[in-house]
Image (cartoon, rainbow, N blue to C red; front, side, top):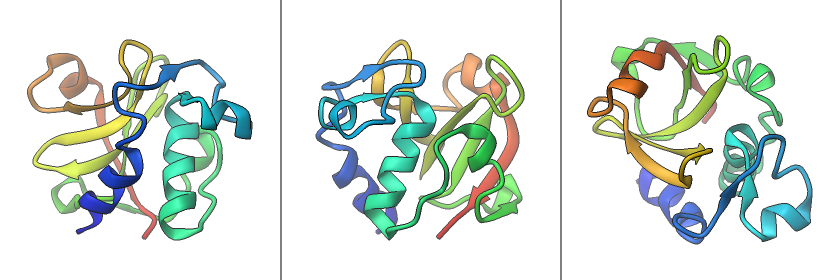
Length: 130
């Protein structure tokens, strides 16, 4: 159910968005589908549950409560070590799929198990905010 709600909110941005480091902080950028990873997750959670989880990965890595990767469920925040520890964040959709904004794709869903890049970058940090 949660993954369907998240996907519904994100649907207008998949294939119709642009990644910009530090993007998505203004209403104008969000309306035009310009996001970085954390502004996208912030935007979705604000729409989904009316909660501001912070605009940066540093803020979001303290949102909600930390849970074990073995207990991940759709709607959880998942963190990856990219440019730094917890440098990238996305929303877990189930079955290894993650929704997020990436510099190579804009907003998209990727499989963190099928891609060696994402599998190796996943650091086991998962936050439940709902």
